[in-house]
Length: 252
Image 1 (tube, rainbow, N blue to C red):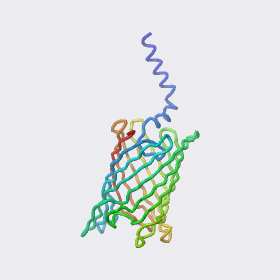
Image 2: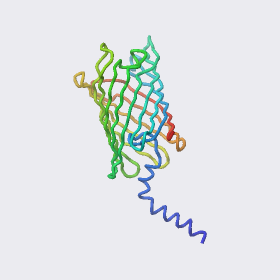
Image 3: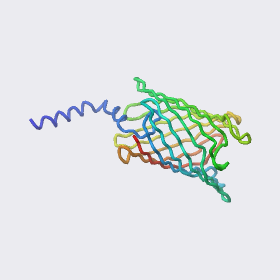
Image 4: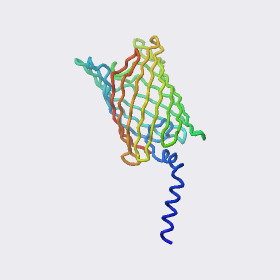
């Protein structure tokens, strides 16, 4: 009689194995899907090599916090602490602080949708560390949840300056994004993303910038990741390559 209960548990687990894959995707949260509405605190060191031959780069640490308002809404703030460096000169300071509000909605069809309104404030303490403009950045996105923990994330984001230093360049560019992601039941994930930038202010200059990221849960409420990106094509070159790592605390 005592052996019957463990056997029934095994049978139940087998019967649930198929649909369980979809449920496992919701079990482990990494804070990478834009439709994941969870509270996070993140430390993100980065290095962006703007021109490898000339030795021009920008590095630093960005502190990020996103706080849940309710099941559909959250707000966030990002504070970049940066260093701009050339062979003969370097500056350190605060970059442009970002504030945002996001709304998400999960549809019954397995497609999650959302919208985000972000603003970058001209808070940079040195000219090289920011745009000198107050930039508004709205975006819309959708996540298609696929079998076996795969998903596709599509997004369009637009950046436009509305005020600021009249002597600095006007900001007006779009950024479509396509991501294919996989979240493993073994508590790790991988993302491959293609960004496409098009500058509406400067003769439709454009850039293709692919990115790859791998991350894992250290425990249920802590995640670590590493990210690499590069310039892959186009007549607008914002960087040669970049690398970053990150540490997230979840469910705060």
